[in-house]
Amino acid sequence: MADLAALYARFRASSAVSTDSRQAQDGTLFFALNGPNFRGRDFAAPALARGARYAVVDDEALAAANPGQYTYAPDPLAALQALALHHRRQLVMPVLAITGSNGKTTTKELAHAVLSRRFRVQYTQGNLNNHIGVPLTLLSIRPGEHELAIVEMGANHQGEIALLCRLAEPTHGLITNIGKAHLEGFGGVEGIARGKGELFRYLEQVGGTAFVNTLDARLPALAAPVPERVSYPGPTDTYPAELLSAAPHVVMRLFGGTSLEARITGGYNFPNLAAAAALGAYFGVPTADIGEALAAYEPANNRSQLVRTAHNELVLDAYNANPSSMAAALHSFAARPGNPAGKVVIMGDMFELGRESAAEHRALGQLVRGLPFGQIVLIGPDMHHAAATDSSLLHFLTKSEAGSWLRENPLRNRQILIKGSRGMGLESLLELL
Image (cartoon, rainbow, N blue to C red):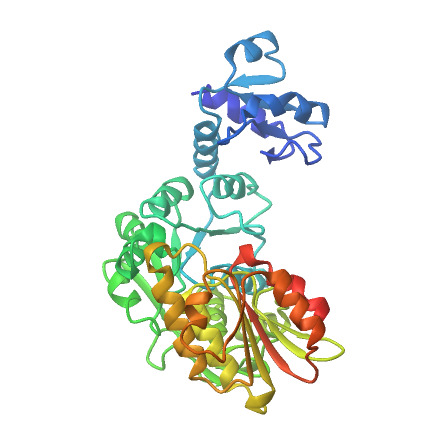
């Protein structure tokens, strides 16, 4: 391991931390991380040429030849994580960790919108929520500049949330829900509960605070050992909230009083909004400010976006998909006002389901054919399991084939739900809709 004190001094003298040599560096501390098909040290010199101030490499000879620019670390990733933990321990502020099967990124964004009404907040950018992204988030927090941090934590195997907790040392934590996501890595829903529950187990050990979504029956039991628990959104919970309408936008009542209309669609987003409201209330954000922040939030990045084109109204929820989120989106779309014959569902494969993939896609086919939709379009090789449940379900192996069909059979004056896993990239079909 590199000398941590010396490495921290170089971090303090740098503008930021970088792991991508293709980006403009401008005084950064560059970590030359290794990948399965490349050696990070090969990108250190290009990073320095683009403006990095220092580079951390696993090449001892290279570092010894130019100690003014290079720092040697036998494992640059371990050095990055150690540096992040050391920096975290210099921070005197609440650190809120958010994880869950579905909705964690939306909840993070909503929480940032609400908490920023009172605090200077640093939070996970984009989807930097893994063993590399969490250290980068921690190292972007500046003492004196920030007052509160929100760290999103993602995982697809047991033990990953525990590792991220050891790095971030959260004081507060929220699990959005326990659903069927990353079944391949977690080994079933019970495995998912254990994996996501690592956040609450960490908070139990350190005497932290858990925010508990009581709409998910598994979460109260997982949170029970945590010394301080804040519950939402049930009528007898710490911070109650009530869903008044789910379409075209979510309308809800906060804490038995303030009502608001969000710019986000779908009843499945109600717990995400309620979570952000509970966080705001707990941290002292005035209720009026909470309502204004939630009402002003604009969904983006293909997450629960309501998009009106020249021809149709789209519910674009194509950032990701798993059996739980797919079912929630379908039920919510079916409940939207409008003629069922004018509703079209375009669904893509659900990834990372492992041995459960065929069964889960079949179950999805059985679910969707029982709901009131005028047209169902399935895309991807795994969706053939769903299509096999009913010959009326239209199935295309590729997105290109689906695009050709849409050109030949243009959809007009329809409500259209678009949902699939990130790798399907279904948002590229928008130009045809």
